[in-house]
Length: 250
Ligand code: MF3
Ligand code: CO
Figure 1 (cartoon, rainbow, N blue to C red):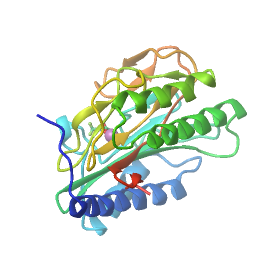
Figure 2: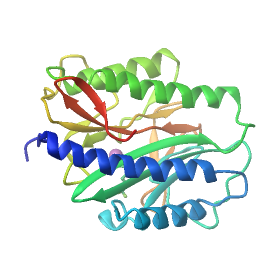
Figure 3: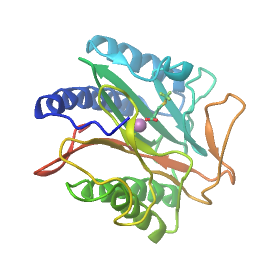
């Protein structure tokens, strides 16, 4: 399968999907607090998605059981919401949500502190991970390459002493959740597929406080750091246009 470029009208539809995802994330962000469970977030998201007339993108995707991925502390991505997982003071939680609206997908993630007692070190991990996403987005311009995006993310992360995850990557997105090309959060400038007008990329740096190594838990989904250090994750969908990168999940 080749990389699918989207028309202006399609990008307009994806803007609506992106906006819907952002509304869910904004709601969940306001609910995060000590004592809240990741299942509380899941149920709130499920209701919000339904109320907006959208459909969840993750539930049933390769049999994934939920509408959200909620990944706490050393969990990197694909944490499964559970009524047993109670958020506590000092935790961080990555919330990843995807929806389909009018046939087009939107996908975005944030990582937030559960309360004010998160350490300055972990706070910096969150700041740098989000900053690295914006460094990647800046490179999403016509004529650049996928390697330019990855290199920009990687440089930002490593300059701050953190590690980029290799086993999970961003992706093209459109009428499917995952389209070509893959968007690694590392790479070499000038390498990889060339970016063209109309491509839409889900750029999603996953950054570990310690070493880059990952493993997947017995539930077959939850990816965690091998060294037990905290991990952060931010994601936006970005259209490559002749006027530069356009963030659809604002
Ligand atoms: N944002 C992630 C991704 O794009 C979440 C996918 S979870 C899955 O890969 F359950 F849908 F696989
Ligand atoms: Co994604």
